[in-house]
Length: 216
Image (tube, rainbow, N blue to C red; front, top):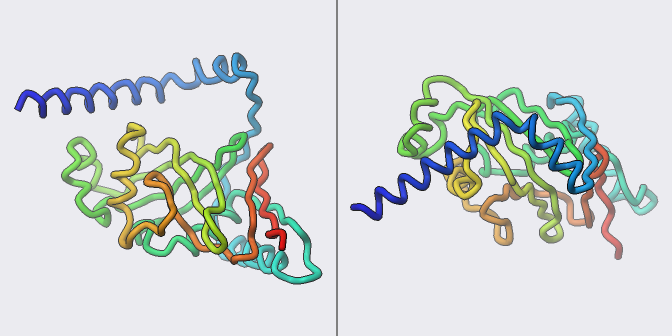
């Protein structure tokens, strides 16, 4: 019993620390970046729409042509359109108003999600109180190619509404989001999504997302 209480106390402490860090990030994050010599380029939030989905698909298909380019640049919304199309069963069906942006080498994504579609979320204590209406869920993370035909969005930070999710809890949250098993090779804090097998690499830098054709 006391071990359980200790674990609950540790989790509550993590939540409080994460919340405090998130609320005060505008004060300490710039200083930390300066000390580490980091420079960040931030893009504006972009909404996904059918025209962006079509443009992203055409750009990807151009990489597959023998005489096509060896790389193609994508806006954050273009990339999110590809991810939503390829992440079958990895995200809740109620994703609405998806948006994306880039900060440095991190890709940020957010959308309104009806948490009632998320299995078992009501059992997660304080999060159960957020289920009365759709909440804006925000992720930040990195992109990588796991193997030919499969890419990964590895989530490093997450929040639901104004509530930051402690990093150790992100894999559990994603497990409840998914309706299907995570693809083999994708990290516990990752969302796997299908890409054409001729995509060999993805890089995010200076506010730009670039997909590269695989070298044969």
